[in-house]
Amino acid sequence: MKTVDHYWRLFSTTLSFTVFGLAGLVMGLILFPLMFVFVSDRSVRKKLARKLIGGAFGLFFRMMRLLGVMRYEITGLDELERSDNLLIVANHPTLIDVVVLLSLFPQANCVIKEAVTRNIFMRSVVAAADYISNSEPEELLNSCVAYLQSGGSLMLFPEGTRTVSGAAMEFKPGAATVAARSGVDILPIAIQCEPIFLTKELPWHFVPETRPEFTIHIMPVVSVAELVAVDDVERHRRQELNIALRNLIQRELDAISEHAEAGEQLHGV
Image (tube, rainbow, N blue to C red; front, side, top):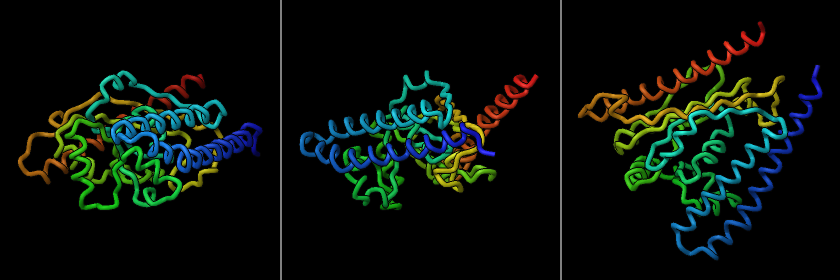
């Protein structure tokens, strides 16, 4: 039997995404097009656009918490103090992972699907923020490496898409290739949501029986050399680095689960 809390969270989830959509329309059709008119300097426009996007995403995430849609805990915030020129790598369990991370790292670049760059409501936003498009896959890796080598920070989800609940987490080699070629330090982030919510196989309006708990753990910065031995063969180094990144985040996810289970057992005593 559905509870009052369940129906409230269903209403709040619908309200949250309605507000998100309306805000996106206003930003994409009015605010960001005007930015091109009044802010001619591309660098200034990019910083302003990313700041606005990060701020809007942060408000959305906090609104969901205030409305009771979910709870969240962010740990490792000290790592934010050195967020310049890093490759930010995270697993991707939910629809709003990018929302969370861009609210924490508003000036970081990210890879946007080509369909988003052609969307009439979103193209001005993406263009103003100067995000990297995956429209040319053969140039994507070079663009990511060049951006990191220019001194910026880049956010990548090595899974390429959201994790399928219950399936083993698998990383594609793209992020490891970018890390190996650029040589910049890596900031791993582990994201977990229990019970499952906003996953790939569930519609956005699915509301679990209990309130979801998001855990976002920002892990210590690591260098490529700390994860893999130096190897002159890029293919070997990329493969080893990909496995090391996957194992690093998986161990943290396992630790988060163990901590949560221990807390539930203690609560039940």
